[in-house]
Length: 375
Image (cartoon, rainbow, N blue to C red; front, side, top):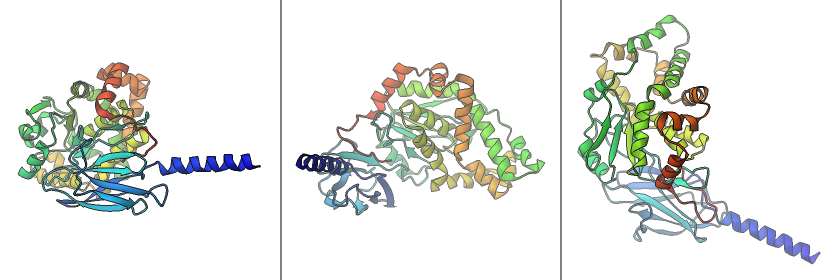
């Protein structure tokens, strides 16, 4: 009997130790002011857990001792930190078991940005996570302010892939030299095979306008994997060089959204997380700036004018990121190529060896002990 009690005690101690060795789940950064952030989480697995939280100048860099909060109760769920003006703060979190993680803001606090986000921090199927500060996605960048440009220059972005067509870029040009070091800017002279008037006219045929918008958007997504394969292939070619990448379109949600989903999939991020990142666009407040730009263009562009007069439910569907859109694109890829991996290899030139190289370039190593990375 004593042996059984001892074995049971050891087993319980082992379970407690394993639970105690995990960091809080769902750690996120909330922007409070230009120089103040809140670090929030859902709580440690053990109420008595103590955490250290502080600012770091970059992932992997020493934590600023002046901002370090020592022995914060894991169940507290919130710490506020002040940081220097004009710099991007990274947050380091550690416990007394040697577990640690670094995270950054998902949505960058740009005054004139539209849906400008970092793809870092997402967990992969092999226990690693996407490096912060290496892969960015965005919408139109024509309204960035001087302070925005100064902020972005400090991020070390080296290349921009602009997925917009020629007329979009002419109407809202990107000042690549003020964003990317060296001003490397990849764009393509093409016109979207997309009749905006016909698109708007589909709503005049009757039926529920929201359902019509959902159907039309799903149809557009089924076309994208083939229509944008050449441009996506060049974006992956840039990624293979290891310099990181900022890629964008106008809203930063459709052409950009599919490319982001393909990049994260190639890196081994789980499908549910890929969908969550895609769907986040419609929750980003800065995306509303695109509605303002669309309304301003309505007086000059008949197609935009027709769209601006659509019922609000239809506009929300068009401006949204319903997961069914991304599913439509991935379903079409599987129908045409058999699998996402086959599409990556056959159409985008990303085979198994390339995926291994991309993971080596853009993923953090797996933690030594069990932990939950920020998402």
